[in-house]
Image (tube, rainbow, N blue to C red; front, side, top):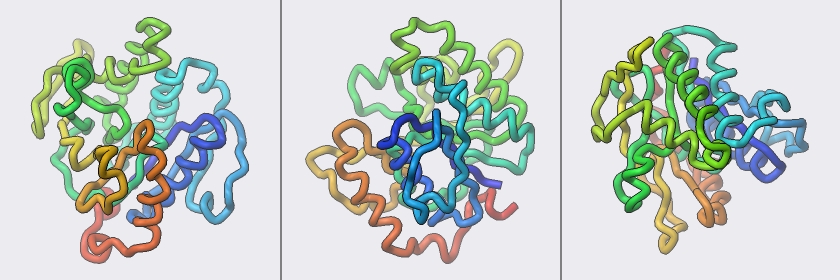
Length: 252
C-alpha cells in the first residue's frame, strides 16, 4: 500500500494539501492520501473526495517543526510495521508532477541539495519530501527525529529544526547512495535522492514551466504563486508514465 501524508495548519495550507493530494491520487490511483489538521476546514468537495482528513489538535499544540514530525510519527505508529506499506511525507506546497517509479531499496529516502550556498552545508537534506518504508528501523529513525527536535532550541522547533535533525540522522552527503546509519540502538538504511528530480524548486526567473521529468515540484516561499499552474498541468493532462508503469508499492 502506498500513502501520501500531509500536516496542514490554516485554510490556505489545507487547500494546498488537498490539491497536492489530488495530484498524488491522479498519478497513483491506488494510493491513500491523509491530511492531518488542527481542526475541520471547509474545502471543495470535489477536491477532497480522494483524501482522508485526520483532525488532531493535540499534535498541533507544539511548534510547527515538532508538530509536523509528530504527525508523521503518529501515522507510522498507527499503521505499524509492514514491509508492504510505503509512505511519502510531503510539505503542503509540493505538487506530484510525475509518477514515483522504482527507487533503490532502503528503509528511508531523503533528498539532497548542493546548490543553495551555505545552507547546503548546514541543511543538505530538504525535509519537504521524505519517503519511508514501514520497517522497524524506519519507525525507530522517525522516533529519533521527533525526540531530537524536542531537544533543540524553541526557535529551531519553529523553523528548520526538522532539517537540522535530519542532517544529524543521515550524516554526511553521499549523493545517490544508500548509507547504513548506526544510531546506537538501531541501524537504518537511508538512500539519498537528488532534489533536482525528487524535490525540485523552479528558479524564480523561470517559474512557470512544465517541469519535464521532475517527480515532485516544491513551490517554496514566493514560488507559491505558481502552485495552481503546476496543479493544472497535472490534473488537465494525462501522464504518459501512468499507462505503462506503476510504482513498486502499487504492485503489491
